[in-house]
Length: 325
Image 1: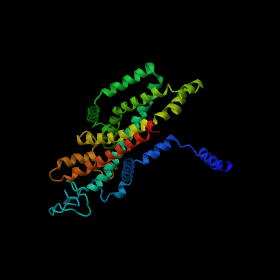
Image 2: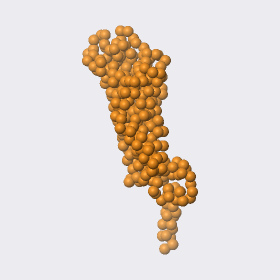
Image 3: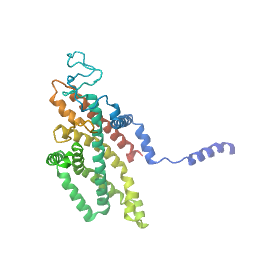
Image 4: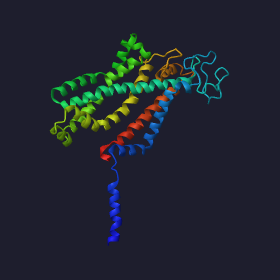
């Protein structure tokens, strides 16, 4: 009897000695088991590396115009004329001014990554504090902050961004970084309302929980309760919302530039942001009959980025869903 009980006792000791897995660790394991999400993360990491090492990866300067090489066909075209036949040094062809399309696509990745990240960071810095304060304070503070949020939310996003971009386009603000600074501000001004509402809703449900009541009873300062107890428990929905907000900002920049109210293309060879996918879309639509590949490449890049972030967002939503914990 004693001999048979020994393995049971050792097994139970092993189980008790195991380090408990954290919720974030479980979420990470679920995320990396999602093949679509992993594929999206790989694509985004590759694009970030391409944006960082663009000067090394580009075969040509993206703003240099080569006379006699305009509208060169991509490498897969075999029935082109001598003047438009593919060239090995321009595998994706050239545009109407003889600029290498591959080099322009690589440098345009920089703009899309920056436009996706910087406005989203500004949105987080505005929306999260407003949501935390409104949800925890309640009363008049909550009512005031939410009415301000409603006023900003009432403006049509795209129309407001276009109005701001057109009104300030010729000012120093509209000319800084080829107009990117103005795009950052316009996207952030109207983009924080959804995140503020989301955080406020999470705080309203959390502040009545037992561990928050216990923290209040212990005399912990309000600021510490918000930062160390409430904010960490709202990170999961914030992360998911951010993963969907980044591709929205990239698409908004491409749309604005396509409409002529976004980034200004540069002809300075030393400019680190000479073009964007939106600029290339605008140029491609004007050459649709003679050079359809000029529209195909930037549209494909935008679609790939959108799909990658969508896969990541779906994976994060499934991994961080508390019902699956």
